[in-house]
Length: 175
Image (tube, rainbow, N blue to C red; front, side):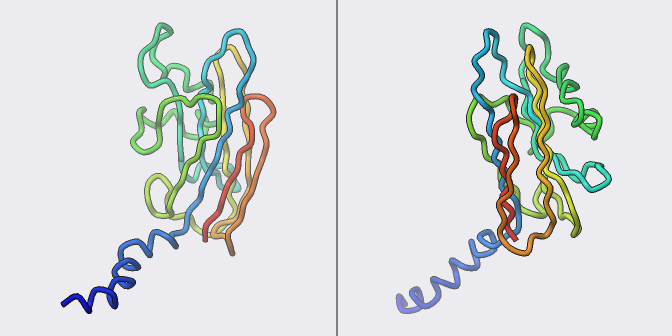
């Protein structure tokens, strides 16, 4: 009875996790720099994919103040993410399951998306841009774009750099 286990174990492991190891997708890293300012507020950040005509392909993440504070509801300030707001953010009901989350402190933050699983839709082949926008109360606003082609022919690593509100933004493409 125990002889079948060693022979079938690799097939069982492959069937269980094999599809996940080879699933196409993207990994995004967003660095929020530590700023030396008198009044610091965590930035609101939106991450989305755009088509060549600059229409939104999918919303990937929105980090904002989700609880009420002395300044009111956090959703009140989402429109400060101007590009994201115009590109469809105003049409979303927040919180948006699988997309919205709390603001993040300074540091590097990673996101992973698998093709076909929400919110990373099955993208038709073509050119896209990863767009990351940050806006901060008593601070500035910044937008970083990383162009890429989907599906990738092989694993790729692409980067862009912000100047003030965003640090390094990297995109790992997994075929």
